[in-house]
Length: 113
Image (cartoon, rainbow, N blue to C red; front, side, top):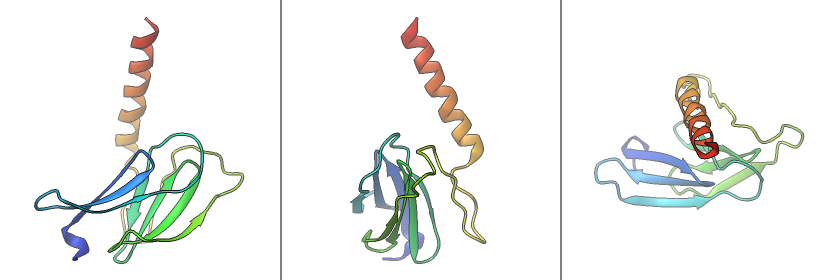
């Protein structure tokens, strides 16, 4: 598998690798433990994929999805984390996250009405 042909998706406490050409699922990894929101922040380099969710950070093999390590980040809380690797763009994109928060607030306001 060539990492350049893969789209990585983080959702509901899982990370899934999809083939960019046909959308077929190559692998899915359920991330362990933690509490709180299931928003998964992802970033990767050429060999490793990092996922932050529920106050923890996880490192996986980019080709297989095998979990290599987990850090529970004790004392950091459970908010959405931004991740950045030197030479790669930060994740999540701040503008995209602002839209997510605005949509959540809008949904909450509509439900309260």
